[in-house]
Amino acid sequence: MFYYLQRKRNVGDIVLDGSIINFDTAVSVSQTPGISPAEDFDCPGDGSIHIRRPGIYFIFWNITQMTGIMGSRPQYSIKKFDGLQWLPFASAGGHYAICPLTGFCTLIASEAEIDLHGEIIIALFNSSGADVVLTDSAHEKASILISGVNAEALENRLHNIETFMMDLYEHITTIENALRPSEIIYIDSIPIPNIRVAVTHIGNVYEFWGVGTLASAQTFANGQTYWLITGDQYPPLAGHTGDAAISTLWIEAPGGNMYSMPIRMDNRGIFFVPQNQLNNLPAGTTFKFNKSLIITQ
Image (cartoon, rainbow, N blue to C red; front, top):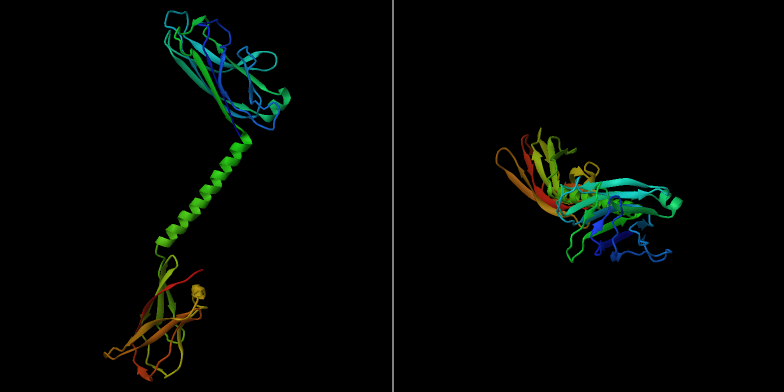
């Protein structure tokens, strides 16, 4: 809930020392429907301003006075009435006989104080130590603007902003993770010693490829399934859905002999099935393939 009051002074050009600046003309004032009285402020006519709602208030004022010679510099003070007397709360001064003069302050109106007195009373005083003469211009000679916000509403708003910023940070982190390549992970093939599968990913796009060479001669039987790695060895593979993805496995022996066959990948792992008997592939034989997969976690 936001509160506001704006008033100005159009009549009278002399403000006695120690007297209240009476802002005689109302410009705007807020209301809170459902609360009696609905007006958030009351201005009884003596220059005082009565604040009825708890909250944090920002008070700005402007005084335009005539140039001249005076015994002290111009000084104006916001004072708060404690039920017995006016106590200075905030002041603003200017150079000798220089106009205009502006000032501002912050006032915290607590619920306890509002509950105790029903309102908080403030006023702007001439604290110059001398009478002042306001401008003889036909325009306004002084003005005051008070804007406030309910402390609970402000706290809720700040909480909402904090929640929004945390969500935004999470989204930014997600975007950064989707754009930043992960480290390369190497996974050993259990049935084929010294052969490994390398994998890295950017977001949900995973890149797999074969590395390493046979440590010793090995035979691969026709029609038998050989798993390079299983889903248990690399759990993200469990996020692959649908039919198996297919790429080409290239097996190259040191002497130059090369064999190719399909290699498949699904949520169970990465595997191939030779269509011909591969006898005694020598040490140093490579198993090369590469395949990109989109894997949802």
